[in-house]
Amino acid sequence: MADYDVVVVGAGPAGSMTAKWAAKNGARVLMIEKRQEIGSPVRCGEGISRSWLDSVGIKLDSKSVARQVKGAKIVAPNGTPFYLSEDMAGDEVGLVIERIFFDKLLAKDAVKAGADLQLKTSAVNLLKKGDKVTGVKVKSFGETRDISCGCVVGADGYESQVGRWAGINTNLAPRDITSCFQYRLTNIKHDPDYCEFTLGSKAPGGYIWIFPKDEDTANVGIGMQLTKLKDPADVKKHLDRFIQADPRLKKGKALEMVSGAVSICAPIDRTVGDGILLVGDAARQIDPITGGGISNSCKAGKVAGEVLAKASRERNFSVDSLRRYENGWRNLLENHLYRNWMAKEKLVTLSDDTFNKVIATLNEVGVERMSTIAILKAIEKRHPDLVKEFQDLLG
Image 1 (tube, rainbow, N blue to C red):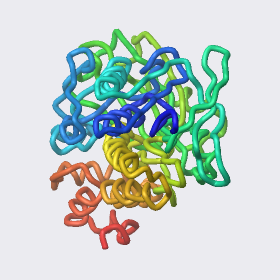
Image 2: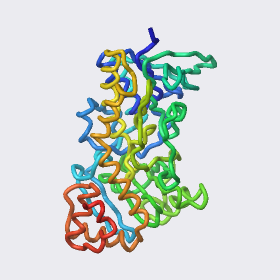
Image 3: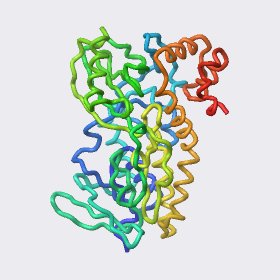
Image 4: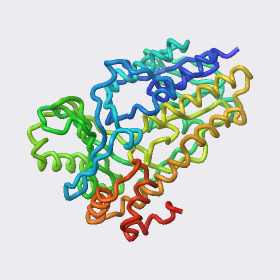
């Protein structure tokens, strides 16, 4: 008998949600985390909405929420803002969370559901019989050991090794990578009621965000498409220039700084194999326009956990059995992800002048929801010339 039905590699939102729903439905689950503390270091803008939390069984505690906001403010290159209420603004707006507590909350839920958890435990390779994954080799406090299981879940983030070891193609083209840099700035005078997004050449191929943490503190960050960088230091330089040019921010002091990368690709071809499953960032389930991944990771994690629990009852972790997860997450997310990837490919080519016209038009005609299609249709009503490059998305 295997040591566990499921071993989840990574205790971020994707891993914890997978572990929770698998354990809750009867599977024997182990979740391992290479770091000594879940949720740290934070590599995230920390913006989410409330709209999807109930659907995946998350009940936030007070420590996990830094700030409730009214909505989003989209800022054109010329400084013109367009405001969206929270219920219109998508999965990244409504709450600014504290990931260091949020991630611990989700891990605690997984443990309460019956999952085992081991910190400072790294996956160093997969165990295989032919192409079938039969477990994982781990290193913990200097000791290496083998853990057998029915399925290994790769929830090990953007730099996922589990997927590569399993032979699942998660490779990214440079245009499908966003390089990010963020400060937590205090002593600033921002609008604490709105998450702010600035578009255009100030952040080539991406955007600059200001996510309020409290009245005088915010996460201020930038994401830039990798192909727009001449030097890795360009990301920080662009953000520093923006901060120095903004009188609200220029006197701010950094409490912390983080950097990293995010995938902004189209959905990958497969996320399962015999005894192997990928979820969250490891499965490239990030929104290609916003770079946001928390909601998608949690939604896909619930699907994964339920499928794995059923597979454990059937004693069948074959690719055919796990394909129920493949079909499940794609039914939930794939169409939205693919459309946003197509839109992203065109958005990165737009000039500041076009962005200015788009924001001006949105202020004229309004928009019912912050989705790619809704925005394009709203603009098309007044200025069809602005969306002629997007006709294939409008269908």
